[in-house]
Length: 239
Image (tube, rainbow, N blue to C red; front, top):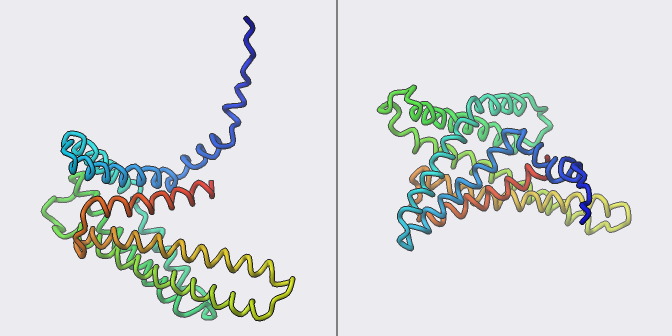
């Protein structure tokens, strides 16, 4: 019996493997993977509890909680990222659309506040902050997150409307030169629609996190899982 020699490069040079390595090398990539598992575990905890598998439910809930804590560590000092983003928005030329500029400035400011309370909860878990201090940190964090997403939705709607208006204008002047531009605008419109769906689902999760809605765990977890998959798809494509 003869054996064919296996070329190790089939594995080590595999395109998907190399892309996965690039994805895992970035904090955003690891965060999106953990978020997907976190919300899927949260859904499984709800599902197992409904069919009486309480041990499985507790295990899934524990996994979800542990991953939530790990993701808070990933967000350490992330407010600085939004502070820099806020500076760029404020430095933008006055020719930039004033609505988008104002909304983006408020959105970054709100994200900074949200992430401050998110970090407070992280340090409380580490017992670096007294557990009795900031008793409403979790609720405030959820509500500020919801507000930041809501401001993002304003920009999503505007981007969708602008792309639709541009397409209508191009349709009145159909010629070969506009084909490439039309394709680009359609891509922008699709991206705006997708982001609107994404932000709407995240808003649902955030409103429940801030105790402004009281939906069941199954719906919250499914919404979180859906947006996690969308986020993972984006970082995978960018890797």
